[in-house]
Structure formats: C-alpha cells, structure tokens
Amino acid sequence: MRNNTKIPVENSSAAEVSMLLDILLVLHLQVLVIASSSSAEEDESSERDAQRSKGSSHQHHWGYHDQDAWLSAFEHCSGKAQSPVNIDTHKVFYEPNLPPIKLEGYDLAGSPALTLINNGHTLQLSLPSSMRIMRGFDHVYVAAQLHFHWGTTEVPGSEHTIDHVHFPAEIHVVHYNSRYANLAEAAGKADGLAVLGGFIGIGLRDNDNYEKILSALTDISIEESDTEIPGFNVRHLLPDSLDRFYRYSGSLTTPPCFQTVSWTLFNDSIRVSRRQLAALEDTLKTEHNKLLSKNFRAPQLLHGRKVLASFHTGSTARIASEAPPSETQDSNIMESNGHILAIIFGVLFAVTLLVFSVYTYGQRKKYSKFKKDSKQNVIYKPAAVEKDIDQTSVTVS
Ligand SMILES: *[C@@H]1O[C@H](CO)[C@@H](O)[C@H](O)[C@H]1NC(C)=O
Ligand SMILES: [Zn+2]
Image (cartoon, rainbow, N blue to C red; front, side, top):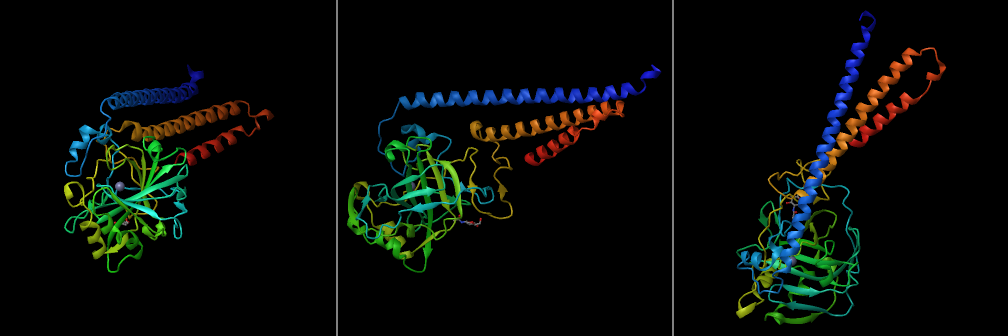
C-alpha cells in the first residue's frame, strides 16, 4: 500500500479522463440518433407531399379576395416555405459571404419591342432570355418576365413587408435556372427560380423609367389584353444599389405556390410619383370589369426559415453562421435542426479531441518522466499535439 501512494492519484485522474471520454461517446451517439430520427421525419413528410400532389393538381380559378381558398385548391400553398413574408429587420442574419448580384443583358434599348400584358392578376412584361443573373447564385438564372403587386390609394400593396409595414407597391423580376429549358420546367424544381424584388415608394418626381411601362397602361386596361412597348434599360426599374439585399427561400406568391424560389429583396427602394402610382392602382381591370387592385398575398409564416441580409441592419444584427434561429416553436426540423446538429457535432468533436490530446500529452509526459535519461524522449510529438489543439480551437470558435 505504501509503495503505491502516488499511483491511486494518477489512476483516479486517468479514470476521470476515461469517464469523460465515455460521456462524450454517449453524447455523440445520442446526437446521431436524433439526426437519423429527424431525417426519417423528413422522408415521411416528403412522401406525404408526393401522395397529396397526386390528388388535386388541375387548375382552379383563384383571386386575391379569398386567399384561404388557395389552401384547399393548391396543395403547395399550405406548405411551410411560402412567400411573401414579413422581414423583421432586427431578426435577419447578417451574412457577409452572400455573393453580390451581377446582371447581364438588362439594357434592352434598341432591342425588339417587349410585350406588356394585363393577365387579370397583374401587369406583366415579357423579358428576353438574353437577360440574366450571371453571379449571385450557384447557377446562371435567365429572366422570363417582370410584374407588379399593388394596393389602392388607401391600402399599400407590397407583398413583402418590412417590420410589418407594406410599401405602396412591389416589382418582381422572375428568373429561372439555366439548367432547365424554360420557366415552366424550372418552376417545379427545388433550385428552379430566382426572383429579384424591389419595394416601390412615393417620390416627388415622375420616374422616367417606370413611365416607359406606365404610359402604356391605358392600352391594356381590359383583362387578357396586351401591347408592345419599345425596349429600354430594365436595370433602371430596380433600385440604384443592388449590394444591400435580403435573401430567403420561399415560393411563388400566386397559385400553385411552388416552393422553388430563392428570393432577393433589395433594401434600397424605388420611387415613383403619386400620379404614377395612382395610374398603376386605377387603370387595369380584371374579370367582370372590376378594378385590378390589391393583388398582393398576405405575409406567410417563416416556420423557422432564416432571412439573411447582405448588410448590417443595426445593433442587433447577427452573423448567420453563429446565431440559432429565434422561432423555436417552428417545426421545420429539416432545415434549422440540420444547422444545430452540425454545430453540436463540431463542438463535441473538438472537445473530445481536446480531452484526448490533453490525456495523451499527460501520458507522454508521465512516460518521459520515468525515462528522463533516455535520449529517445527528446522528440517533438507533444509539441505537435499542442499545436493541433490550438488549431482545432481556432476552427471551432
Ligand atoms: C433597409 O435597411 C434599414 C436598416 O436595417 C432599415 O431600417 C430599412 O427599413 C430597410 N428598408 C428596406 C426597404 O428594406
Ligand atoms: Zn410577384
């Protein structure tokens, strides 16, 4: 017993370390179990989706007056990644790595005439496939059309809201992924669509660029009518700065509400005069010769989706990769839990590595103490291990 006075101390510390390693192992396993069960849930829900979509898929008439009716007629409209949404500027995640948007071919001055349509739901301008988003996404996106959402003189009609406030109107420039043949084919694909959205407010002067469209409104006041307008620089319909924007994953804001849109909403707004806005609000007619107005969908729940911002939105802005989602009541397990699990894995791995390295280092030190005189122990491995530990903690933090 006396001989061993020192050994029990060492043994107990070794036992502590091995217990700690056991606990960490159990934690790893638990995380694995959670991860696999949540992916099982994901499989189930996508199966359910597939089954439902086999049911009702024929076109229905729809209108903005009864948006609840969309839910039963179009299965995607009740999904958990719908658009538009409210953008809470205090809850968006600052993401400095969002690539800037780079447009090409937007200047259509001198190009063939463009078709402007009143389709009964909106005012829409057809766009040539030479217009593209070259950078900003994993693929090139090709322009197909742009259109507007608006209200009345009394009711502002943007679809997205900023801190629950509507702008008078909103422009959407719809693009499809160049992997697909056309808009129709891309619309149902997960990476199919990219829409650029701009908020339209009231300014003191007429906006000459918007006038190129608005001056033709009286020609297409009847539903399902169209006209031709000369090509112009479509870039000028968007805000001056494209650098500051929000990004989130959402849907078409009209039936069939496919959840295939990567949304980009610019922080910089566009201004038109009160007269110009009134022309948009008061000219076009929809079915039964009723005024085409208030063609905006109500904001939808985020269900755990993150809204990223390419810019600092204020003191509460958070880095996207650090902060957890704030809406804990949401059940969008696939997306938000994926991120959390990745972080937990990373931290557990780092801690395990750290404990193991410290333990190994301790063992080596002890070992070298016993063999103090042996030259074989003048090796640099412990230092190398220390270096590894430093590098690991840098990566994690
Ligand atoms: C632009 O960002 C600022 C700063 O967060 C915010 O106060 C403002 O409401 C934003 N406007 C739009 C249209 O996003
Ligand atoms: Zn739209």
